[in-house]
Image (cartoon, rainbow, N blue to C red; front, side, top):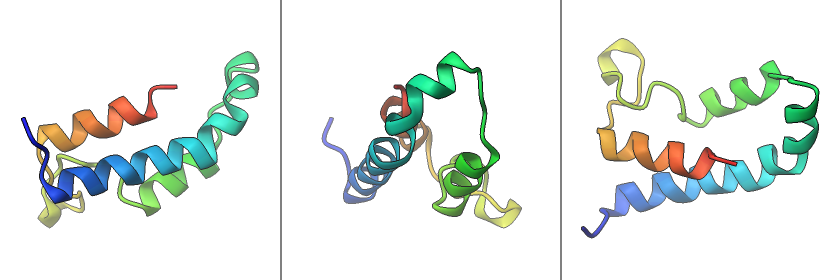
Length: 76
């Protein structure tokens, strides 16, 4: 299956976020069992939460492929 341009952009966005924000501190977050609010706020700010929630309800209104791509890229 070829991904749409939108799907590719979602993948790139999630990958950049994981590379720039999560991976540099992943070992400490895991070791200390931390869930920093700042990370989740940043994720929400770039649209990585509510991927499949309709836009009318405050979500991104995307499909399950988009959700899967985000989850795949955020898996550390």
